[in-house]
Amino acid sequence: RHRTIFDSTIDSLLVFDTEGRIVEANPAACRMYEYAREELLGLSGMDIVHPDCHHKFEDFKHQARTTGEFYTESVDVRKDGSTFEVEVHGTTFNFNGKTHLLAVIRDITQQKKDSAEMTKLSAAVNQSANMICITDADWIIEYVNPQFSEVTGFGLLEVIGESLSTLIAERDNEEFFRVIRDTVQSGKTWSGRVQCVRKNGEIYWERQTISAIHDTNGRITNYLAVKEDITAELTTREKLIESDKLVAVGTLAAGVSHEFKN
Image (cartoon, rainbow, N blue to C red; front, side, top):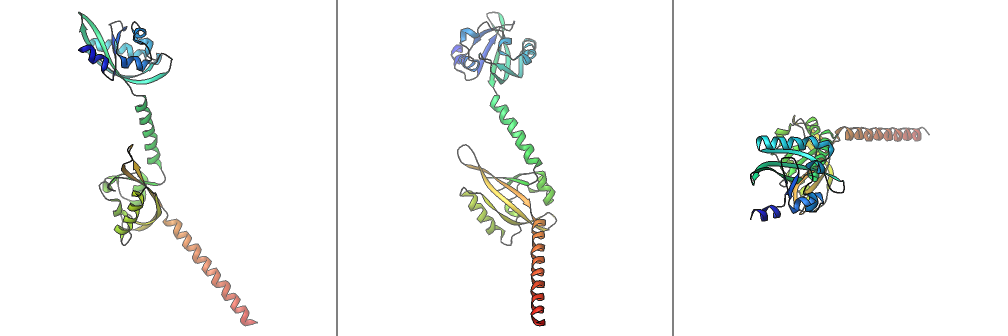
C-alpha cells in the first residue's frame, strides 16, 4: 500500500541514505530529472544539484539527521544538463533499522518567473508617471499607485473600498459612469476626458483609459484605469485659442479700419 502511494503521488520523491546516495525514486522524480529509475539509483544528491547549491545538499543531510526536518530552495540539474528551480521538504524515517532521508521536491521554476514578472510589474506601476487605479469586478477600488495620491491628495487607505465612480465630478456622475461601465464590460476599452475632484474639493481634468482584466476562463476579475492630469494642458490650449481669437479680432478690426480710411 505504501509503495502504491509512493509511486502515484504527483510530487517528486527521492529517498537518500545517510551518505546522500539515492536509494529510491518515484515516477514523478524520474520524469522531473529525466532519468530512468535505474539510472537515478546510486547517484549522489550532488549529481542532481547545481554546483552552486552543493552546500545546500550538505545542509539538507546534516539538518535532516539532526532535527528530522529540512526545507530549502535550490537549483537542480536534469540528465541533459538543463537546470530548474526547486523547493525541497526533507524528513527522516527508519527502514529496516536504518535511517533514511525522504525529500519531497517541487519544480518552482514557473512560480519564480511569475514572481519576478510581478515584481517588475509592481515596480513599473509604482514608478509610473501616470495614475494607476485597480478595482475589483464590482468597480470597488483595491489599489492606487503613489502618483494617484500625489495628484489627488487621497491616500491609498482613503479610497480602498470606494467605487471608482465617486472620483468623478460630472454633474450626473452615475449616468456618466454607466456609459464607461457598459463600454468596458462589452469587451472594449474606454478612453476619454473626465472631470474629477481632488481631496481638497478642487475640480480638475483627467485623460483616462479604462479596460477589463480577465482570468484564464475569460471572466472579468478586475478593471484597470490609467489616468493622467491634463488640467494644465487644457488651460494652455484654451489660452492659445483665446489668443488666436484676439489676434483674429485685431486683424479684422484693422481691416475694417483700413476700409473706412479708404
